Length: 275
Length: 296
Image (cartoon, rainbow over all chains, first blue to last red; front, side, top):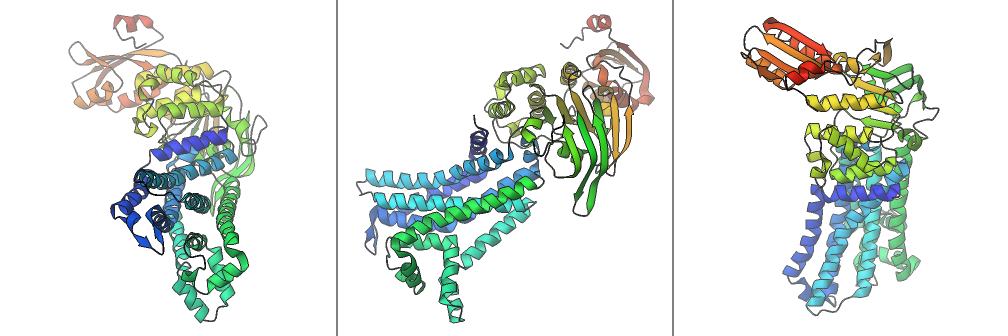
């Protein structure tokens, strides 16, 4: 078998046996169960009801949880493996560094994306069994957004794991990255920046550079096409992109950011000490 | 086969290797000894292409950093501490065999010779095996393929006497065609396995000496030890070598692998005050059979 796929498979099997994966899968599965249990599928808001409402809430919650989960688990396991001597041994086997690194990234991507996706599919299956209409377009769109988000933060996680020489430093750095992105997600902070005479374009540029904000805006777009919830920055976004343009941006930008981060991580990895 | 030329390695301000020059050819069995921090592990990691360095390292003319797949396909590596790999045993064997283009069944056969039936542990994560089982599997992965260079860090530390003997036999099968580097803190642990000793201290090679290659790796010794009086601590220590108590309870008999003789005498030396006599017969199958001690 191709060494890249072989390493991806090995990483998947390793992750499936790890405790973090059980917690991770339980959190996303549990979220869907909770949303059903609290009757969210029956509630109505802004014209959304049934599965659409449930998926909308799920995606908002996922946006808050997924990045930090992906960042922490990636840096913990990758940097932790290096500290524990796993790299020393496995990299003494004749595997190319590219196959090792990108195989790990591929395996990890499947492992972080599949539980989130499986929870969504489970929700849809449950809804169908109860006779609800399935919002297929929304399902495809949200699935694509989740893939982009998972890839983006996985790439950032791999970069941090490569740069940090210990799992403690890596975890700290991952948390700081997440917190920074979270801070610039806050519309109040952006509002204050504008009030403090930061040009509106700069505030919007910060929002557009922040993958969490991009994801949030994109997920709102389906039920708030005018982006009323985003306030004045929405005008700039919609004027420059249009709805379709922004959806494309929301899918492409995180993938590019994640790939670029992982690529820089790989360049550092192959030029530095491996274990 | 292996050339280290002016090899230096620095971690920030700490220079761990200082212009090391060393050449190792096929047939050389090198004990790499030195205290903690001497630079042994760093030297090995440079050889495995895992560290960046100044100077030059080559294996058959290839740079382990840039031609890592070609170099590492020749290398069997056994680390001192088994890595906490969560992969199931079967998958780990197949993963390693696939990367090395080797036959996994050959690796499993070597493990079986060492006393580890891999089939019994197929689904079990590697990390859940006992220390000895992990060591046996790592040795099987390193020796169960056509490696031309064996790099081992205290490889037999966790092995029982029988497995140590088989391990020495496996090394003997490789000794003509391969080079071996066996790293250890203590020379007595590996002295009888090697024909060359390289000692490192503070990043430099301070001793590079050939040693008499008189001990057959596959030889065994029949040993009889008599005590002046019984001693429970001795009974426990000698029991770990699988010796049997005979006669009046003061005599112990057993088999020691030839390369283990120095290590065995080291254990006995701790009880010198209570030893009445020591008898060792090399390559004598008669006493072994007579005493019913064959361990094949």
